[in-house]
Amino acid sequence: DLMEEFIKCYPANPNEYGYGKRNYRRGIKPPVSGTFANEFFMNSMGCPIRAEIWAMICPGRPEKGIELAYRDGCLDHGEESIYAEQYITALESLSFLSQDRLELIKKAMEYIPETSRIYHVISDISGAFEKGSELEKVIDYLETEYGDVDCSISFYNIGVIALALLYGNGEFEKTITLAVNCGYDTDCTAATLGAVLGYGVFWLMKRYRPLWIPGFRVRETSGMQFKGETK
Image 1: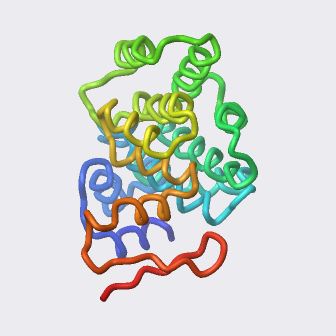
Image 2: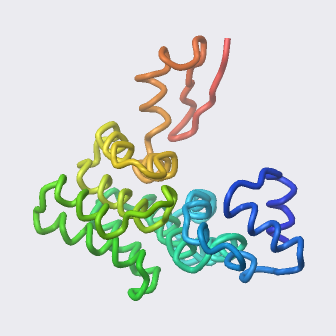
C-alpha cells in the first residue's frame, strides 16, 4: 500500500502530510484521507512536488505518469492539488521529448480538466505571454487573482512555474531566479523548473560548486548520468 510505504519511509508529519497520515491511521482511506479535516492544506504543493518521481518513472509517457500521480496525490490532498501534480508530471514527462517551452505548457494542459482552477491559471499566464504582456504586470495579476495566505497554495505556485518557464527564455539561471523572486513555495517552483529544463545538476555544480561544498565535484560518465564524489 502506497500510504503504508509513505508512513514508513517518511515519518515526519508537516501540514497536509500529517493530516493525511492521521486520517489513514483512523481508518479514513484514500481518496478521502486527503481531504477530511484538511481544508487549509488540501490544495497545497505537498503532492505536486512529488511529481518528479512519476515523470522520471514514465519519461515520454504522461498517460501512465498521471495515473500514478493521482494514486499518490489523493493520499493527502484534494482534487486541485492532484491536478497540479498530474500537470507537472505530464510537463516533465513530455520534456524528455521536447524543449519547446510554450508547446510543453500547452500540451501538458491536455491532461487536466479544463474546468479546474489549475488549468485556468496556466491558461491565463500562457495567454498573457502570447499577447506580449509585460512581466511585471503578469506577476501583479497572478498575485491579485491567485494569491493566498498559504504560501504553498498550488494555484499561485503553478502559475509561477508557467510564468518563469516562459519569461525565463529557457535560460537556467534566469528562470530559477525569476521563480524564486516570485516568492511563495520557492523550493517547489525552483525544483520543478530545474527538472523541466533538464540540465540543472551539471550547470549548477560546474558554476557554483566552489561556493557550496569544498572538495565536492561532479564526474560525468555518459550522457546525463553523473556521479558525485568527495575528497
